[in-house]
Structures are given as C-alpha cells and as structure tokens.
Length: 297
Image 1 (cartoon, rainbow, N blue to C red):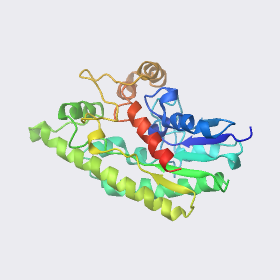
Image 2: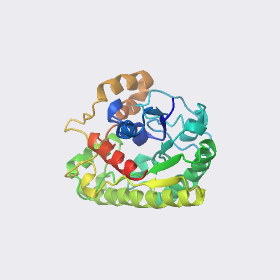
Image 3: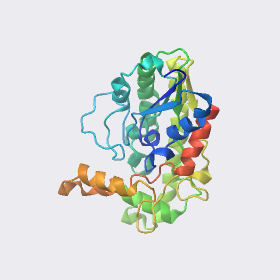
C-alpha cells in the first residue's frame, strides 16, 4: 500500500516485549505514534524472541512461543528468515547481546571465568558487528533507519535488597554459607549490573561505528538507577513476596512454559519461565523506549 511505513523488529526478550500484551510492546507503541504521519498506515513485523542469542556461531535447539526464553531463533536467524521485500522496510528495530553474556552470569558475582568484561565484548561488539553487517546487507533501502536499542541497569543501589534476593533466587544464586551475611552479596551484584550496562552500551556503540553504515544509530533506554527493578520508580517488572510474576502475560505464558518444559527434569527451566518477565521493561518502561526511539528517528 502506498505510503505504508514498515517496521521490522529483531532481537531478544526486550525487543519481544517480555510480559507485555501486544499493544503495550514498544514497537507497537512506536507504530501507533507514527501512524498519524502515514496515510497508508504503519505495519510491524516482529521476529524477536525471548531468550534469543545473536547467533554469531551455530546454535542447536528448539523454538517455542515468543514468551518462552529459548536461544533460537537466533537474531541472525530472525534476520535471515525475513523475505518479504526487505528493500521496502523503513525501520529496523533490533537489540542483542545480553543472552550471549548470560543473565545468570551478570547477576552471579561468583561467575568469574571468563571475566564479565570479556563476555560483554564478545557478545556486544564482536557478535553484534556480525549481526549489523547482516542487517545492513539485508535491508538495503537507502532511507531505511536501523536503530539498535541499548540495555539498562537491572539492579541498582536504589533496589530493595529483599526484592533483589527474590530475583537472585529464581536464578539459583545465593551467598555461600561461609559468607554469613547474605547482604554482602548485593553490592557485587550491583557492581556487575552496572558493569554490564556501561560496557554493553560502549561495545554496542563501537560495533555500530565499525559497521560503517550511516543508517545505523544507537538508542539509549534512558533508564536511570531509580528505574531498576525493585527501585523507587521501577520501569522493570519485579516479583511479589511469593515470587509471583507481575506482568499481564503471566497466565498465558504459564501455559506455554508447561508445554515447552514438560519433562520432570525441566522443573527449574519451567519455574524460571513462569517468572521470565522479572527484570524486563514494564508498561511504563516500554513507553520510555518508545519515546527514545521516536526521538532518534
């Protein structure tokens, strides 16, 4: 249709909109805001998937509903699978890297090998550069805008320690008995979250520069330390006192988690899947991403 503005979304759970209903996801919010400018309307084709890794190297595994965290389809596979006239796409929204680093590795202060900084470089620079070259070659329209959204500080010094312990528990992270005071684990976790945010931002920007395509720009989340999970003004979903998820997609995701992780030994993956929204942008967080994206167009 003439004057239709086409958006394609690639990436992991943040781009997918983990825990959000369709109209609440940031690409849908962006499309709604842009709709007034285009008589032919704005379309969104979302290939992003919770848990997706970049896929710079071959990945083996199954796929499932987008709310169920799985490594595949990788973000490169998402890009490769798009065959609907890529030369007519006007905006590509993408992200990636956190699952290559590993959320549990970010939150676990005892995950020291390889160092977190090395993990971040390999994922957010080396892997992202491979992805960006794929995207640049795929979506060839000269006016197509490619926007790489950044991450945020998951846990900050503004986060309620009790909530932090709840989040760490679903990832199987706890202080060893010899430490004694469990609160001693919080500061190293905060340091690692801040390191991931700062380093991922730097490495993603470096990958964009190395891709050498003026159509590609970085978009900051715009989140502050007060917007971290369990902080004063959280823009991320948390967990209640009973470890229940707080997102509107929790019930249908529960069903999909049961379908995907249906073996007795899948109990840990299944329980984590139920709570997969924790640490992801909530409705207000998605609105913030939308505003950042619109400002970068």
